[in-house]
Length: 463
Image (cartoon, rainbow, N blue to C red):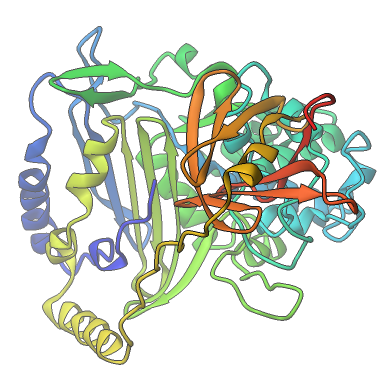
């Protein structure tokens, strides 16, 4: 789920009367949740006290069960901060190292020629390919099998930042192996129960939760089940409620996980060249007109989640939804801020935002790649089958109109125009053909926004 604008999240409860008025207007804002459809649960706390706890819509359309205070949702990638916390507890105990090569814990991981550390994983600076993107090419394998099969990285560890779900799948696996317990047991005994998060659990099958919501996407005028299950969900999911997530935020505010874990979770990461990032360890940490904001969003198909903490305002906000894209479209609205923020703080935020916009130069529009004239003979030279062991996939390539036509696994067809010699591109997808010393085409490198330079070798007999 994309992060909502901070102006639409900065909720400050000034007085009980204002909170009561804001709650009524919050109900108006969620009037898009009509009878018989899925919806959202929202809770707000101020100085550790829950001041808003509202639910809208159905948790399960098949049983017509409503969303209630004990309804648990798949929180998607909001779970990453819990995985990081579990690992950091083991680091503090000396059972894990932030800087050791993770192949000490995962010896079957390929040797990439670079040292990848636990800290690289938790800060999304490892370069390890995202298993969700990999599954677009092979839906038959589970997440860990796909990750361990990759022989290349998107970039050298610590050189760049790129969000990858594989990082935290490996964090959970390391925690499991080092602790000698399942991740579900680690999370329950070291995090959820000690903090009083009694309605939160780690589940490999989200549909078995007795009080769990199901998630739906609107297709035309019908709601269709849309959840990440089985291989598509990775190792498992954290299921939680909005009030339990506020307990977690309060624990971070008050250091209940201990000084080391609390600080390290929220310490912004740095690249090898010293560049500071807005990502810490399973959390985003940003400076806003309202002070520091500690946030993370989550999306597991039609489940949408958002957890926000504004320490300077003593404020926490949690939202869990099961209404797919409808949840996002209807909540990207700054009216939420107006419900709770004192007017002077709203004006302050408006002024800061306006000043920032005035000081910015208009962003140049990305120009479409210019075409490059490639002869028909050159295009025919690319024809053939190209195979990737990493992805478990193949492309059949043939010539097109100043383009290559590529059929993936005998099904989906892509047409990429020529933009340079040996380089073809359509939008964010690029293919660069590779030649040997004699000039013969031997392979192609395929790139997407989530995968870079994945090598497909030309099959024998296709030269």
